[in-house]
Image 1 (cartoon, one colour):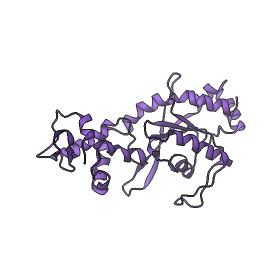
Image 2 (image 1 turned 60 degrees about the vertical axis):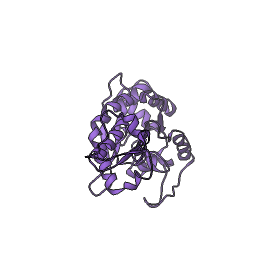
Image 3 (image 1 turned 90 degrees about the vertical axis):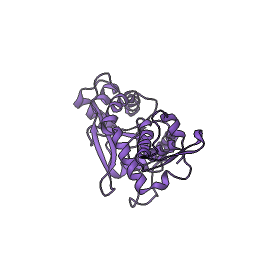
Image 4 (image 1 turned 180 degrees about the horizontal axis):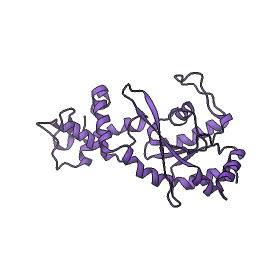
Amino acid sequence: MNRAEVAGALKRLAGTSRALIYDVSEPDAPSREQPQTPFVCGSEAWWAFVDRRRALDDGQDLTLLVSMRGLTLDERLLVVNWGTAFANAFLVIEPSDPWLDLTTQDGIDEFAASSGAKDADALVRNAYAEWIYWIRDEQSVLESRRATLSLDQESTLFDTLWERLPQTFPAAAFLSSLTLLQLKEAELFIGGREVARAIIPFLTRLGLPIVWDPRHVITGVRQLVDAGLAWVQDPQDNWRLYRGPSEPIPAEISDERVALMLR
């Protein structure tokens, strides 16, 4: 089996049309002189990957970004966060062994021999997967975390990850993040913006909960309003102002209508 066959098998294992394979070899990896610089030196293979990534960088749905090798901390951030508009909508998946490199024929042959895989589909199922996600610590420093995804003979990466997301980012995580954003960056949510736009920071910023269900963001805003920590106006009711606890949003008003209210 060769590299192209392994990449094809990874797309099948992903189980979604929104699968992006990072197939850039280590010698072709991007680099920058300092972590804070926006300038990146990259090979032809890197820029080809950036073009493929740009096509999926729309914030419409979650995208699996599957690397064919384990990545360093800096390269991982370049892969998911450099030049992307919706970095937090890309879910990074790496091999279970951080030293495995399936971009090389030697790496493929050695792993096939050690795992007993007879074809590319069996090989990638044996090789994956680690899900990489980010959080911010108490000092707001970005940290990456690893979560092992247990694949059986039938499951796909997308199915397994979809089960894991609610465990990692429950509804309470969205309310907590919204509360901090409201206190520290209230300008994100005021100025006549629709409540639905509160989802944008969760799509663009690594370290915030990954939006696996947009309703959690709307519900979080609703809870902030009911607690008196935020306010909204309803254009469907003569611009009525809601701000709890004396003027909470009535329970009978749907989340869909709340999403269209302005802050």
